[in-house]
Each structure stands twice: as structure tokens, then as C-alpha cells.
Image 1 (cartoon, one colour):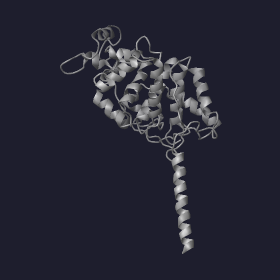
Image 2 (cartoon, rainbow, N blue to C red):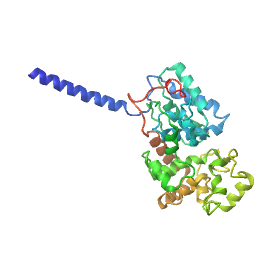
Image 3 (cartoon, rainbow, N blue to C red):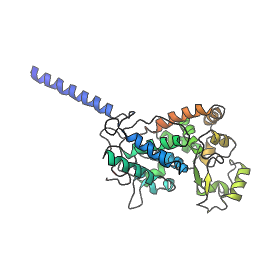
Image 4 (spheres, rainbow, N blue to C red):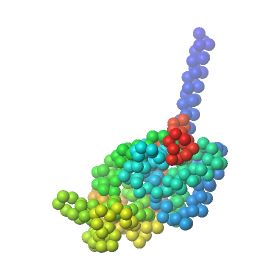
Length: 328
């Protein structure tokens, strides 16, 4: 009888220990690849350092890719998956203008050559987004690693979860809250619009077809709207002309974006929506009246938080050998 009790106690203790180990394994951590692939992060940063100066405009798409990945099934690299039937995340309207897929795949190839089946595509996206922003003079943030990859990529989920540029405040708040992100995160992460470009197709409705009663969005500065119509988006059907999201400062990670938003010159309805809520409006004013250093620090915290959204770790998920192939 005593022997049976001892065996039960041992079994319970072993179960508890395994649970503790599983829990510890399930956490992201700094330098996760220190033993399994010690040069992983250096390989990524070196590749970016080597190529980003030839294409500095790639920093914005890479950070945008990180956003779009994390907002669908968490940060699991599913945005990179190709579909033969046209129904993967990258086939959804929010992702049709994403760039940098080949860049990420090349980094994955370099890592596979050194450490096969070790570094996840999800971690590569997270590290690449940070390193690309840093390489162009922007802020740095901590990127704990240990994410694993998903194998499901669905265009409908991308359409339903990624905040569109036409979002009003209620939609933004809901979609961010769905990912465990609050209003402060919404304001700070929107600050990534300080770099990069978009297309007329993302905001044409604000100029020509805002509602059944008003053709031009009254929340958009009229002088700015007139300039866009005359020099950039000359018709509702223009889907190709490129626009800077932060005109005159699109390659500098600074507070200029927020200043434009306060002047009603944010490019998207989603930018303008940030001023329709008293709490987020106050946050923007506080940022503008503060230092760039303070903005960088706050932005870093929100990026770290977003990078943890619904991550797959431990025994959950896989390590894809090719980022574009679900079953690799």
C-alpha cells in the first residue's frame, strides 16, 4: 500500500515538474537561439545592414509585415505562406501591397544553411522589422525569441482582423482589443506611419466618394485634399500612384506624423480617427509636446507587447524550413 502511495506521489511530482518545464519552455526569451544557433540574430542584422542602405524604403514594409502577421492568428509567420488557390493571408486586400517577402525568404535560406530547422519564420519577421528600423536611424526595441510557426493562412481572417485604413475609432479600438492591445498601443503603433508610403487606393474615397451626401471627407484638411487631387490622386480609380504617409519626413522615424494628424493631414481615415476620442487625442498632444526619446521608449514597449500576441512556443507550432510553404 505504501509503495503504491509513493508511486502516486512520484507520478504527481513528475507531472508537476513537466508542467513547470512546459510553462518555462512556453515563454519567449532573449537570446533564445544562444545554444541552438548562436549567430542567428547576427546573420539577420548583418544581412539587413548590407542591403537596407540600397533600399531604405524597405524598412516600412517590413515593420508593416510584422503588424499584419501578429494581427492574424498571432505572430506565427502565417503572412508569408503562399497559396495555390489564392486564399492565403497575403491574398487578402490588406496584404496585396505588402513587400519584403523575398527578403525574408533569403534570410531564412541563410539560416537554414547554418542551423537547419531551428529558427522560425515568425522570429525572423520580428527581428527583421526591428533591425530594419534601426538601420534607417529609428528606435530599437527588445525582441525576445522562441516563436514557432503556424501552418494555417486564411485570407478571410486577414480581412477581418487587420485594421483597414478606412477604420473609424470604434473599429480600431475593437480590432486592437482583440489582440490584447489598448488605446495607448493604438496611438503608439500608429506612429509607424511616420515612415513609408501608401497608394491612392488606400485613401481615394476620402477625396472623391466619402459618403452618399459628402464627396470629400470633412475631417481632411481642405488645402491638403486639394493638393492631393491636383498632384497625386487625380481620380477615384487611381490605384497605383504612391503617397508618402508622412510627407517630407517619410524616411525619418520622428514625431512629424503626429503633428500632421493634429493638423488634419493624416493620410488615412484611421489616422484621423485617433483625434475623435479625447483619450487618444490627449496622448497625441502629449507625444508632440514631449521628446523624440520619450516617443522611442514608449513605441518600443508597444512593439514588444505586440510581438508577444498569441505566440506559439514550446511544443505548439512548427519550424517551417521555407517561409512561403506551409508544409515545409
